[in-house]
Length: 194
Image 1 (cartoon, one colour):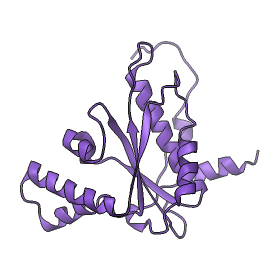
Image 2 (cartoon, helix red, strand yellow; image 1 turned 120 degrees about the vertical axis):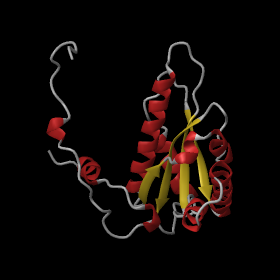
Image 3 (tube, one colour; image 1 turned 90 degrees about the vertical axis):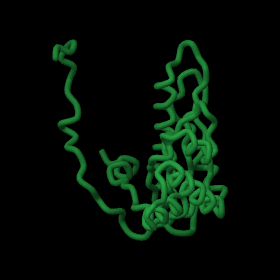
Image 4 (cartoon, helix red, strand yellow; image 1 turned 180 degrees about the vertical axis):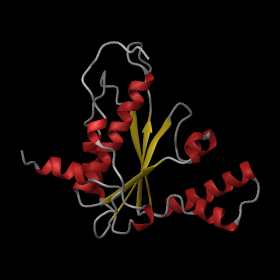
C-alpha cells in the first residue's frame, strides 16, 4: 500500500544543529507547527505542555546566562567549553522549547502528562519537517538544573521535554543506523515471568 505519509515518516531524520540555517519558519508557519503539535493524546484535555520560542537576540542572551551558570557551578571554563555554552541556543535560527507543565488531577498521573508533551514535541518536529525545515531535539545539562530551567523561562513545577532546533537545510539529512523493526515487537505471550 503506497502512502506519502508513511514514506515521509520512514525517511524522517534529524539534521545536525550547526547545519540549520536561515530562514527560520515565519510566524504563520510557527502557528501551524504549534497547532499540529497540540493535536496529541491529552487525557482529560489538560494541555499539560506549552511552547517557548527562542529567536533573535534572546538566543544570544540565553547563551551568556548559561555560560555564567556553568562557570558558577564548575568554576572557570576552558575557552572551548565557554564558547559551547555561549552558542547553545544560537546555532539554529529558531529553537522551540517544549515544556511539560503538569496540572493537578486525581485521575491522570504526571508521567502520562509528560508523555503527552513528548508526543507534542514529535508532532512539532514532524510538522516543521513537512513544511520543509530541518529539525533536531536535545535537552542538555541545563534542563536538569533548577537555575537553568529558570533562565530558560520555566516555572519551578515545569520540566523540559526538549528543545527543538529548527532551520533551513539543504540536501538529505545524514542517515544513521536504525533498529531492526522485526526485533521490536512480539505477540502477547502471557504475564511476565522473568
